[in-house]
Image 1 (cartoon, rainbow, N blue to C red):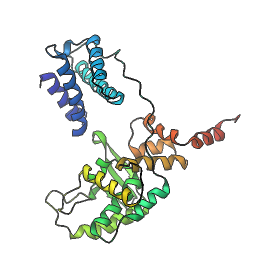
Image 2: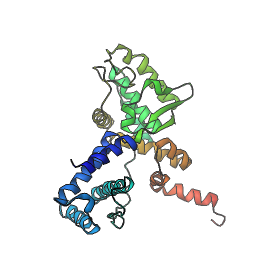
Image 3: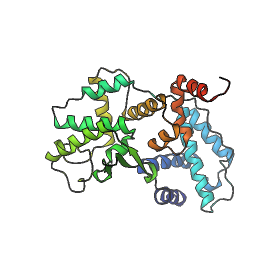
Image 4: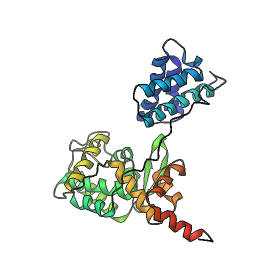
Amino acid sequence: MNSLIVRFKQYLVYEKGLLPKSVEAYMHDVLLLEDFLGEKPMESAQLEDLQAFIKHLYEEGIATRSQARVISGIKSFYGFLLYDGTLTEDPTELLDAPKIGLHLPDVLSIPEIESILNGIDLSTPEGHRNRAMAEVLYGCGLRVSELVTLRLSNLFFNEGFLKIVGKGNKERYVPIGTMAQKMVNLYVEGARQKLKIKKGEEDYVFLNRRGSHLTREMVFVLVKQWAQEAGIEKSISPHTFRHSFATHLVEGGADLRAVQQMLGHESITTTEIYTHLDKDYIRSNIAQFHPRY
């Protein structure tokens, strides 16, 4: 790996504080470009080289959304080269990303959510854990990475909040409702007490049978299992609970800024996608605030 890419990786880890998965994605994008440029130094690349690279991605059949992500990674890399003084001009300034249509995420209805929650078998220790996890996913709108790294020391039930460490190690406080609190307490004070917990794993809330914290992959498997057992044919993932959490709040009239804060979105533009899921929400806002409606 050349020195520029090594320095970029160090910048992402130590200055930007990105999670390993995010750093890995940036590295993937930059290494794709390095491979395409061949003998040409990356700092010498011009706009024409980068446009040829994007054309190459298209010809390789890379999906539009993936192309856009790679371009974003490349722009970040050259932004770093400007930041550290390697370059004085940005060759990506006029590099256009492909147009991406609005992607509306899959959402579960409230009856479907209730069907999943009520369908989890509470006769087993894992069932109590699974019900608590599902309640937290839907009740707090967490990312799966935030769920599996949730710690006992970050549960502030007396105040009704969880402290969440999200993307880029940014902290936020998320309200937790009484039902989610109840199911977490039942698990923590019951089934979890009977586990032989591995050293270093004591503070994680959700553990597997071996006393280690769950992986993201395991939660994906469990969510698929819950949907199947509830007779839901939609293709869902842990993120579906997060989408459903936000959608149901927005449809119920929650303030978009509050939803943004709970989800941990840096930009409200990201949160605004949920207003596209219910035309009645938009119409009701216009009717309420427009003087001539």
